[in-house]
Image 1 (cartoon, rainbow, N blue to C red):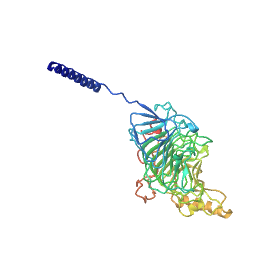
Image 2 (image 1 turned 30 degrees about the vertical axis):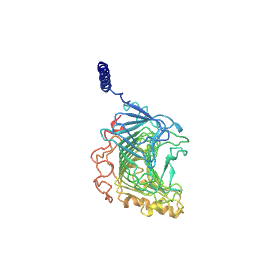
Image 3 (image 1 turned 120 degrees about the vertical axis):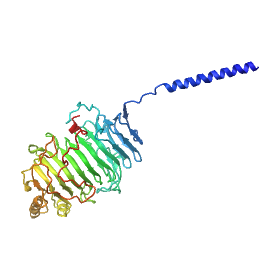
Image 4 (image 1 turned 45 degrees about the horizontal axis):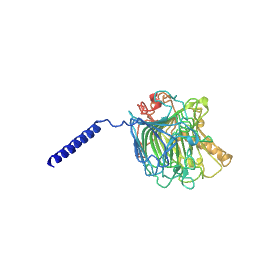
Amino acid sequence: MRELNFQLLAVLFTVLILGIAACDKEDDEDPEPEPDEYTIIDDGNGTGTTTWKSDKTYFLQGFVFVNDGQTLTIEPGCVIKGKSGQGENASALVIARGGKINAEGTADNPIIFTAEADDLNGSVSITDRGLWGGLIVLGNAKLNSSPGESQIEGIPTSEPRGRYGGDNDADNSGILKYVSIRHGGTDIGEGNEINGLTLGGVGSGTIIDYVEVIANKDDGVEFFGGNPQLKHILVAYVGDDSFDYDEGFRGKGQFWCAIQDTNEGDRLGEHDGGTDPETGTPYAIPTIYNATYIGRGADAGKRVITFRDNAGGHYLNSIFTEQAKGIDIENLEEAQDTYKQFQDGNLTLQNNVFWNVADGTGEGIFKISGPGANEADSLSAVSAFAAHFTDAMNMVANPGISKDNPVPSNAQTDNLASYNDNWFDAVNYKGAFGSENWASGWTRYFSGK
């Protein structure tokens, strides 16, 4: 009996040793490698709270949402590619109200949104547009349209996560920093394209700094209401307007650069006040310092900026060049219109430089559009706005910039408007660039790939 027990113990000991050896062998085996590419499809649950890795590529198939309560973190160097398709098959990344995106790249490792066909090494031309959708950020900040929230353009009305607007002007949708958005603007139907970067009801708590939009088929950056604040923005070679705002946009901007393709693009700035109603409050009165807008040239017949639909706004210490037409404001029969915003001091253009714009005179650069209340009103408006060119210390001078190099060789450091808000960097030059090109290296436009 004792001998049998010893034999049983020996068998059990052998089984135990073999089991430990098998476990050790399993531990020594390499784990399954993670894939380098992921295809993201939204089944209605959004991305969830997750992180997209720096050494991976993510393909967007259709509209992909970051839902209310979710946070998408994107690491520096990550590449996100939108699959091709139009209409309901269009691809885009949408940050819904209450969702957040934390996309914080670096100058050495920017985050890149581009088309599936782009190998990031020249396979897609710098002028190829409409190859996928774009990046859409929606928030809870105020609009001036009724009933205070809207459905963002580019997303079917059947999708409730496409709503934006609310009562929180300080709303925080996350961070976009060192982000390049390329070759977007696919058509979703009836000539309605997606913008490169769409900001709907975005609040001032959102950080947007060092962002490029290049070769988008529609607008570069479009603002729908809200109070976002943006620095170091490059919009290049887009098919429509470079910077477009509507629905009571009241944010801030500094160091904005727009560069138009010789063969494509409409206005450098299309600035509308409201839609339904046009006179809704809060009024669209953003403040923009240190812009550099480089147009298509005289032969294209395009305009620097249009203010209309009761829009206001302030441009200071900026440089505008190479456009057939200057800046026009709308004067209508209504008592409250864009010209009224000008009269009330809610629309100003101060201490700016113009070169190769219109006929090079204040009267040619600052124009009035619309019939006015009557003939006398129209004549008075034309005279008053033309006089604003000189009264507000604007000037005609050659800053020595080009599409290849927007850093002035003839720096404009005199006659500066003061900075009366601590959010703005108090620099000693006009235009988006001082002595260095902050867009060099990390952007598609200035890196070449």
